[in-house]
Amino acid sequence: MTTHLLYLHGFRSSPQSFKAQRLQAWVAAHRPGVTWWCPQLPPSPRAAFDLIDQGTAAWPAATSAVVGSSLGGFYATALAHRRGWRCAVINPAVDPARDLAAYVGEQTAFHDSAQRFFFQPAYVDELRALAVPAPVDAARTLAIVAQGDELLDWREMRARYAGASLLLVEGSDHALSDFDAHLPALLGFLGLVPRVGASTPHPS
Image 1 (cartoon, helix red, strand yellow):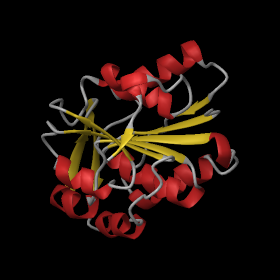
Image 2: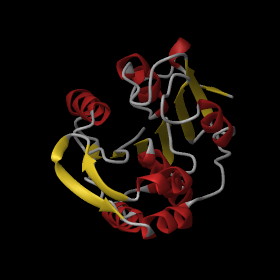
Image 3: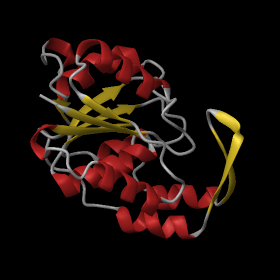
């Protein structure tokens, strides 16, 4: 069972992400003993990963898990690769160095348009440096992939996480707006509820 749970938001997002808020609320209500952390990630991928790495350095490897959405899924994969943690990714960024090169320049925060940051060209190289081999352990990695994702190619995500347990969602969108429908599968993977019936993710 997971005793420490880290949630990593996506590009331009924040801990105000509805998925982060929904998962945090469930944990607080049903598993209050679980340590929860969803940090605001800085724009620099190197700084973001350093924050994550240092903030979880004392967490127990056997019972810690990370959930990441979009760019957070990329970070989650890198962290799990380093730590041997259980990892769940939601519409994960497969090649953010390629995709975010088009976003170099001033950006606005998704949840607060008054907040702005500059995505620097050097950040693309930082993303490239964080890339890790494809996960192969289906017991430790869950990928929730929406075929209706309007930003990322679901086929590329499925191929990147071919060695993981795969929950392929028909329709939906990049934000996984129907997150509640897939929450039981995620909670089961994390060991927070029994993995039974159709809620159980299956290998691709």
